[in-house]
Length: 158
Image (cartoon, rainbow, N blue to C red):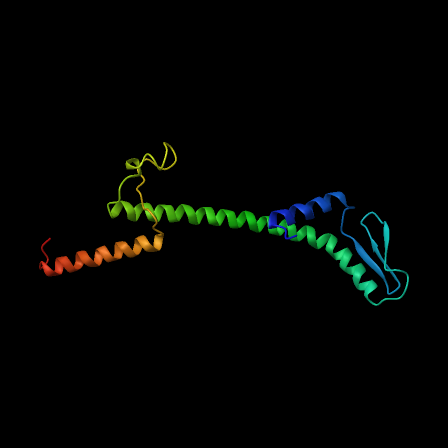
């Protein structure tokens, strides 16, 4: 089962809340490896037979107790930051579309009551259709170029 980022964070936080507080520490080597919780409890790692990976497993478990919680915290912070950036980009994109759409003479959204209800968009907003900031800027550039050519043909009259 693949978890979403939000599900992963929630699961780490759920496990953290249910477990003994960290940080945990690892000790021992080989057959006798342990994890010690912050309150001093000890958990044996391995099967009491010498296995070189027992010590590594103990260190892994102890480290994950703290690292997973820190990773979830940082991931949540990154998500919040990402959402703030995306919101700012969306706002700026809307403002660019509206500024250029008004300059290009696009129709006001109030001409399309079947699409947008009252209060859904600013009263002075215009319909920019399927444009992105790039495509509407390209249209504005084409129109500017055409206007320049017209003025040049007319000899500066216009």
